Amino acid sequence: MRRPALLDLLILPALASLALVGCLVETSDGTGASAGESYGSDSTGGASGWDSASASASASGSASDGATSMGSSGGTSGTGDTGGDEGTTGGEDPTTGDASTTGEDTTTGGEEVCDAETPVALFLSPDDSNSMSSPVQAREAVLGGWQSSLGGIPVRMWEFFNYYTFVYPAAAPGEVVITPELYRLDGQSDDEYLLQIGVSSELISNDNRAPMNITLVLDESGSMSGPAMDMLKESCRAIAASLKAGDIVSMVGWDTQNAIKLSGYKVSGPNDELLLGKIEELAAGGGTDLNGGLTAGYELAKTSYDPERINRVVLISDGGANAGITDVDIIAGGAGANDTDGIYLVGVGVGLPKNYNDALMDQVTDVGKGASVFIPNKEEAWKIFNADFVNTMAVAARDVQVRLDMPPGFEIVKFSGEEYSANPDEIEPQHLAPNDAMVFHQTIRTCAPELVEDATEIKVTARYKDAITFEPREVTTTVTFGQLLGTQSPMVRKGAALYAYVEALQGVQAGDATAAIADAKARIADAELLLPGDPDLAEISEVLDTLE
Image 1 (cartoon, helix red, strand yellow):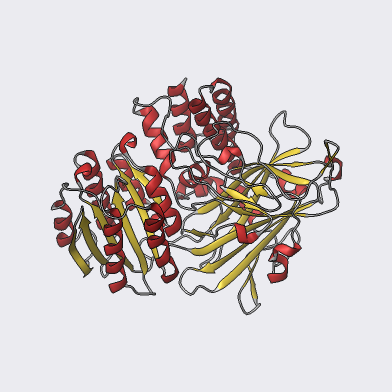
Image 2: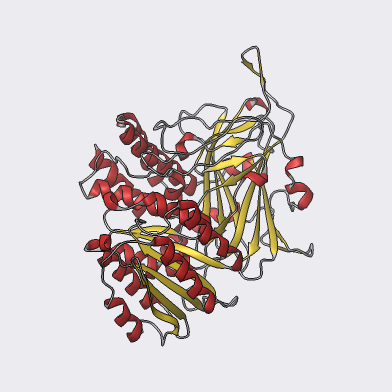
């Protein structure tokens, strides 16, 4: 997801020729600015091209089983009802299989009918575009040695693609760049391809970011005693070290009562002494009224709201809600209602994974359209809230929605996101952070492989809004199979390794992971041919070795 500078130097030259194909950013007044030289077919997707009425419904529906939340009591579900079937991504079925495709009935007497004439248009969603909790919980459970079966640990495919690093070209300020990649695995059938799409944002340093208005909503209930409170304080210290002079901080601590500790305070710079003092005074005790704390936090955030600032509510808790109003829909609705005003929510889980109420925090941040992270140790706290502070806290593009146009006869059979559909109204747009990329990894299959030629085109369109002005924008990239297959594809290989890794974790939860672990290791070895020394590949290899 993030782009470290060293990896930029190694990977970006191999990707630049892919990203700058047919890119044109169209503003609301119909004018456009070229985002790169085209060696493919230029096109811009206007309103008529985006309309679901012009899209084929021959392949639409739910996400693949590979995107399910395994072993989680709070698996996320989404519907993709485009002609009869409903697609879910809950936590009940621990298997990984093909994506369900709904819509028109394409069978006659039990035999499949290949529609080789109607183009396929699908709209893709990664679900939470900056949620990264489950990969950390899974890693800590295995490497910590306390949960080798991963029972009760959420394994949400899309969060792994959010958490781990994919290096794609940076966009110009206020724009996004689309980079498609295509790859064939050894032994893969002639009718299948791996397609990965990166939608990347601009690079923004902490020195050059907009000023912030941050409201810290901090759980001081009794369940936070020990490691949870330690990590709450460490996360706040990392945030304090990342602030600039003039940033506004408010702070409310809560158990069954709300205590406002700071309101609209402008810090003097990094490590402001008054702010650090307030952090040190935090202590655990009492019950938990999460909704009351969150409501008080948003009220504080509104008092200092400034449309020229990055307005964030940072909720840090073990996710427990055992007093006051604990209905998840009410809490999530309160978080989401403020998103239209530009106040975004970051949910920070702390403590031990086995004690963390992941389901509650996941739903709150899903509606709040902010990051959901899990902080098990000091290193993770400083990674998320210092090294990756801008990525975690800021927004580069709002309400991003991606459309994939494929040739007739194609369908998605595996998908890393939560859902896809032929109807854009069924896909929830997501925000994109700076220094970041939305990554969609899918296996696509055609019923007419003989029709695929080097000149056969794939088109990807991203529609989004400016993070500050809400101005609508759109960018389209058109490439051919020949162009993509003729280019080395390091990120799609890494995506294949990560997808197989998650399938292996899901296999562990199902009690049968031997074959899945072997496949994941093979995919990692393949990715390492182009990405030697990649730290993410090394980390997931360590987890797999521990599971064997």
